[in-house]
Length: 441
Image (cartoon, rainbow, N blue to C red; front, side):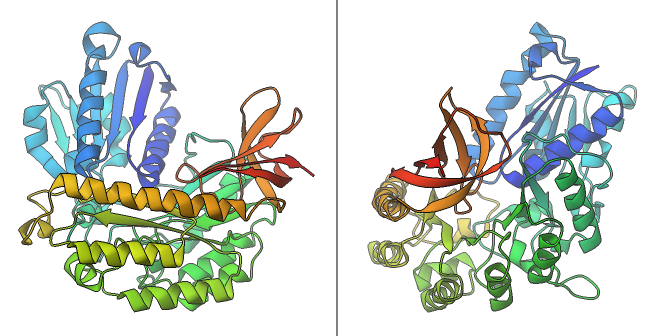
């Protein structure tokens, strides 16, 4: 039996998709990249913002066509979309045979192979807070040979007013046991992975709920001891829990990337309070000062929301000035995505989408100038580059420690004879808005 899987959304979703594939291969399924050949199709969905919902629905409807034009007998929709819209989604998508929420990934093989007889649709939505972490001994089917995301926690105990994630993944933060993470990491490194990227809703909250308590700093130290020939980085830190122990741990280990992904969402104190973010612009200034003082080569990444209810021109001006002041190496900007099931929906003074989009464009235009200037500073410097793919007969593509997979720019390396997965010392010769290029030394 052949299966095709489409994975949408964030890196955390990708880990779930790779885990599902591992379970299915263990059960004897063959994976195909051609949906027309598949006997079963899975769509692992995202519903974080309206654009993600639209993409999920479009993908489901597109792949549902193969129930008529291909071999597909069973279409399964998993993840955040059924978790958010539940039985209403099943009513509106009669093309789908099975719906699995975020707490039911371990049941995918059983549902496909042993569905209850006489049921037109199956909708499994167990409480994600009660779901067990995946077994680490079942190999994930990775989409990359050189990098792997490692999910270190589930759920979120915070209450940001714009965010649906606690409802989708559990309203209680649950750290994965440290030994399970280390075991998974060792297996990944033994299989050839050269970069481990830790992900969770808030990675910097890791360990506080364990008994005895632990921390991200302790976990990073333990991971760094697995091998000197790997990179370790983490995404999705939080300003409130990015403490000095984490910063000092990064400074003290050469194989932990000096890379700080800390979504701040805004810089106006008034808007931060409305968002449920319990820090101020001065707190952010102190945090970034500590990072740059302790880790001089630190790369900074953040994400911003424009058009949040009540955002005035003054609020936006404060945000623009702060971005110019900090000069992030990498910046993502999203427009506020409203929905009736969000607490922020009830806030007064909504911002029209034209204004939100215009502010997004202004921020990205400003960041393009900052990024280009930051990249110019790398010219004639030498960095290890993790080689990930061949672009042509004479050019390979990879990343430096200050470029995270998928979300940042890349570094092109001119050469005919490089090996994928190797770290190659590269002198930077040219810099662009988001990418770099250089030659091996």
